[in-house]
Image (cartoon, rainbow, N blue to C red; front, side, top):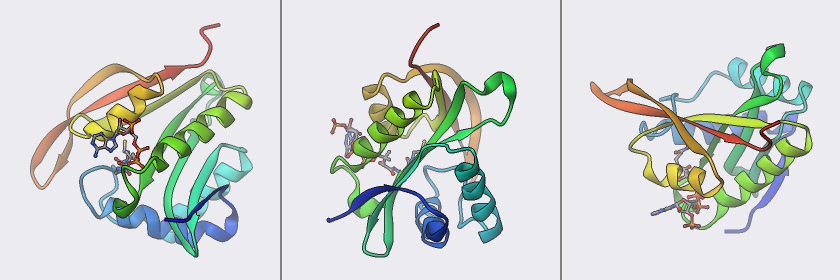
Length: 166
Ligand SMILES: CC(C)(COP(=O)(O)OP(=O)(O)OC[C@H]1O[C@@H](n2cnc3c(N)ncnc32)[C@H](O)[C@@H]1OP(=O)(O)O)[C@@H](O)C(=O)NCCC(=O)NCCS
């Protein structure tokens, strides 16, 4: 698969929404279970761009095949940290794309002065957890039964990465 990893721009909002919707509809990995509304995606991306947060996409032709971003908490006492989210389309998984996206986004986060990145992941999402651990994320807590899909509960792990303990 030929793709290019680039920072997201306003013109990508619609295809970003398509990619998020595709992974959300798998119903196993994201907090979303369906395609988010255009208004939700637009306001999120515009906020990301305004805050100059790292938000990268892997683009193949006119399709986004993966993304990784860090979002701000928009709270002064949390300005040193952000929350990471990512996804890769099913057909492109296991080929190193997630690793490349994560590397770029963490490097950019560090460069802009973040000292902490956190994320939430279902305890049964073993591939994602392996990827996060590869980059040094540590489990900081377990939210029991935090997630329920089709009537089945799953625990959610909170993971965090510190760039600098100062
Ligand atoms: C998690 C996700 C983004 C990883 O992307 P990816 O492109 O598959 O990742 P990579 O190919 O770079 O693999 C990264 C690591 O994940 C683990 N991994 C990936 N696929 C794996 C598999 N089939 N079996 C075992 N480990 C696997 C490995 O540790 C791998 O690192 P390594 O190759 O150095 O051993 C992708 O699986 C995905 O989009 N999943 C659905 C959405 C999701 O879970 N998002 C995160 C929600 S918290």
